[in-house]
Amino acid sequence: MSQTLALPASPSRGRNVTAWILSVVLALAYLAAGGAKLAGVPMMVQTFDQIGVGQWFRIVTGLVEVAGAVALLVPGYAFFGAVWLAATMAGAVLAHLLVLPTPAAPAVLLLILDVALAWLRRDQSARLAARLR
Image 1 (cartoon, rainbow, N blue to C red):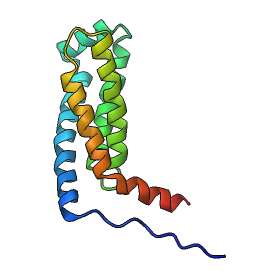
Image 2: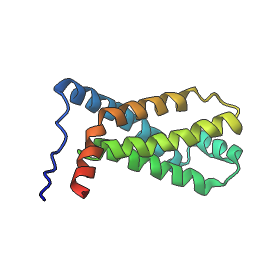
Image 3: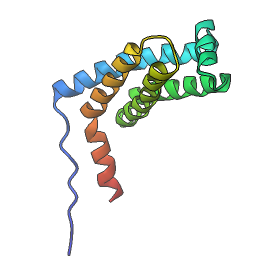
Image 4: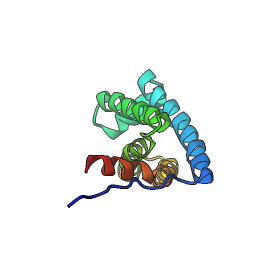
């Protein structure tokens, strides 16, 4: 018995252009945010002091954001970068709602945009799954 595995069809041109624009916008946002955390911008240091976990968590979060931003721009990895960053933003939303006195709206917006990008790039996960079978 022989099985033929067909890769999913490529996304439409419009969907691809939209995904690339969203990838670039999100990558710029995460590079700025992650860079600020890694650079030790005083506001970021203060925010992570309020969270109470320690400054090591600021560094880890900055590295996660920068790595995710890079993944958004590497063909074939945008889906995984978007999911990675969506999980990060889910944690940020919880931190804003439960610990921080600042509004959660920016983190919620980034979470929504990450989920939208993951949906636009869902073909990447399907292709990987087909190759792994």
